[in-house]
Each structure stands twice: as C-alpha cells, then as structure tokens.
Length: 208
Image (cartoon, rainbow, N blue to C red):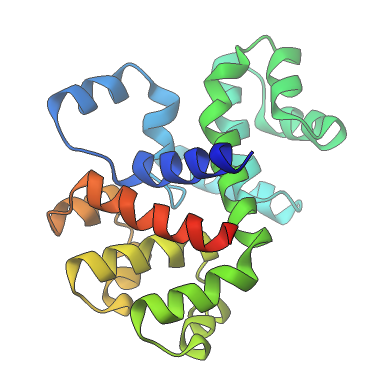
C-alpha cells in the first residue's frame, strides 16, 4: 500500500511537470482527456465559462464540473444531467459507464483527486516537512493556504521553488496567473528525475 501511495503521488506530480520531448507531446495528443487535465487550474473553453458559473451556483465543485464537461462531450449529454447522476452514485466510473463512456477516459481525473486527498489526509506531516524543506516558518506556509492556495499546489510549488532556487511566492504567482506546473518547470529547466526525487523525500517523510 505504501508503494502504491508513492507511485500515485510521484506519477501525479510528474504528469504535471513531466518531460518535454516530442514523444511526450505525442503521448498527450493520443490522450486528449489527459491533455485537458494538464490545463489545470481549470482552463475552460470560451463557450463553457458561463455554463461553469451556473453549475458552481448550483453547488457543484469545479473538479466535478470539469470531469462532467468532458463526459458531456463524449456522451452528448448535458453536464448537469451527468452531475445529477454522479451526485447519487458517488462514482465517476459508474457515471461514465451509465452514459456509455469508457471509464478509463476519466481515470486521470480519478487519480488526480486521490492524490489531493492523500496529501490532505497527511497534512499534519506535510506542512512541517515543507517548512523545514524551504527553511520557512510553518505559519507563512499556512498563510498561503488561508489565501486560497490548495495543499497540492503548495507542495508542487515548494518543490519547484527549492530546485529552481526561486522564492515560493514567485512560483505561486505564476500558477495564479494561469501557468501550468509543466510550463513553470520547463521555464526553470527542471529535470523530471530531480522532481521525482524530491517527491520521494516527501513521501518517505509522510510514511515515517
């Protein structure tokens, strides 16, 4: 189980910041759902923004809306109908199957959510580790969370900050301005192997 947890955490980070070769680009071309996932934080198509706002007002999370919109395109069904079914089933795999969509097409979204939950579940270990890792006060890092940053974003930004030798707030500002972590890592010329090693250190600290 510990090995699975590490693999999940490392893979999700590397999915975001991975390598930038032509082979990587071709792989994403062949997996449009995964390619869309990399746009996070939720970059909606121009025609979807109004629909997203309406669905948020109805109480749905942006993550669920994001997945529902992808399923909507595959199933040719309104996103609200998909969200209503998912609200009862509590399973995206079951929801995809119900609307005639291959569940593997949303697997990346499912793994992404599990990764976030894993970090949140271990927050009491993650935050002290990041404070020591960056040489900062834990209160300062908690301040970023209070200002709206997600824990998984703070983790990734911290690793990029450490490896690139830049201030954490600079990385978070780039993310806030709409850059993906993949593009940020590319800008700082970071290597996949180094990112993976840093995530392994975090995972090892969590599992102690």
